[in-house]
Image 1 (cartoon, one colour):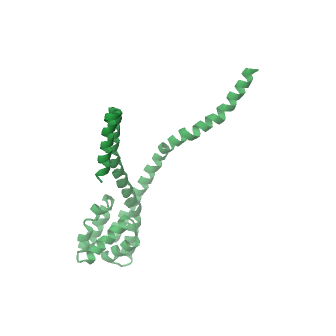
Image 2: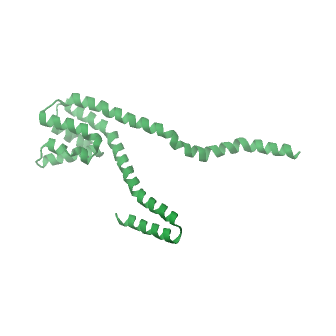
Image 3: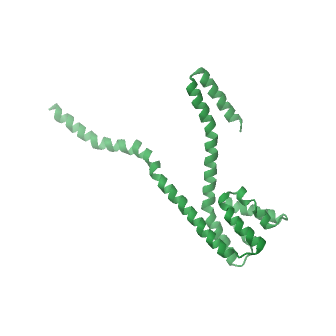
Length: 195
């Protein structure tokens, strides 16, 4: 893991000494920034997966609780069905509970292992297991909140779309449009001027 930045910095130093110092500094900055950007992209992608899966997980938990399952059985059923980060986190908590740990204690580290958007769900499940609070009303409110969060994220991505389409529009479509509209006019003007 440390070999790639070390090689990159060595290459940047060679470029700085052999070619140009500014180019070497630029290369060094690129080598330094690239791992941080990749880590941030992975984190954003994981958060997006969690936000996409969370409403489904909450709805399944609500369905399981309304059908008469206790917290432990509901979490086990949902953990078996979902294959995203939330489902895998719930399944891991159930496995720790099967190994002798109390389910509430197994669910405590869920937000740290899966991600911060899972914290309200973990809190509801822990309260349901420890204190016997009713799950359905809390899960209903949590499902509405998670759907709202997912909708806001989709709207945010929709607002970013015009900016992302700007470069292809300017570099691909606009030159073709100019060529199709101005080329015939220029050709006609040149033929008129030659006469």
